[in-house]
Image 1 (cartoon, one colour):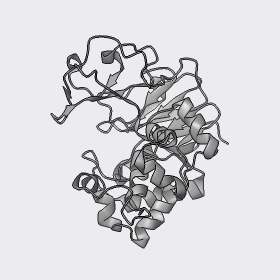
Image 2: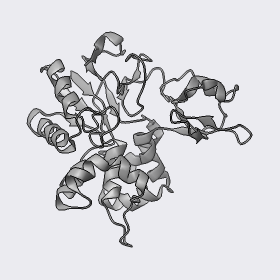
Image 3: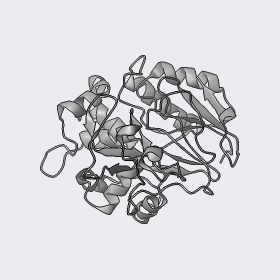
Image 4: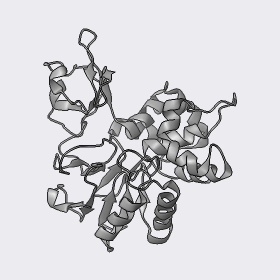
Length: 297
């Protein structure tokens, strides 16, 4: 397997961004994708789920590209899969349908065309360890990976797992969710909710698991517009979050819709999902991640 990888984060049905990224990267390295190929967001310039999926699958088949599953692929699997009771494993609520609208417009719901892609999503592993580089959509949690690997050594889910994952009650289901959506911690009961970017009150705080030295709420939090709304003190000692060790091999992730200029936040872990300034990472075997390997498209 190649020791050079060009790593591309969340495309979200933006065929223009995908093609511009591929053009900018050129050739020579193995392409690697961090999931979330579908479901156009506000940053998507030209929504075309079918074109993105067809192009990525072609790159996997013909050029040996690799890819991991994102939360939108897992959501789609559950959305288009019926439980034993005949009810979709992911509810068809207005919120979920709005999130999945661009895919549904092209393929419909549980149609043969939709099933083709849902079946392909199940071939995507939850993580990849490429020797010197690790890839995961939202969170590299070694305890969760070890737990999943006992049942699914290659990291690929099976149809029989889907009802369990949808219920989110077992340790296996929670581990899967953590890898594709990332960890969150509830605020202390006595603390008021903070306002998210949409002005909605929230009591669950996204945690930047790659900040291994973070000890306080404000140091560890992600997606909190006004950090002063968080508690002043330390994170709870019994927190169920595994921070990435400083001596672990490099890992690249997407998912978090980061703002500002794309940057490598720590030397062995970086989020590449910057919707306003799309980027890719050109990994050439280095053991420490650096900003000069980022390619802003």
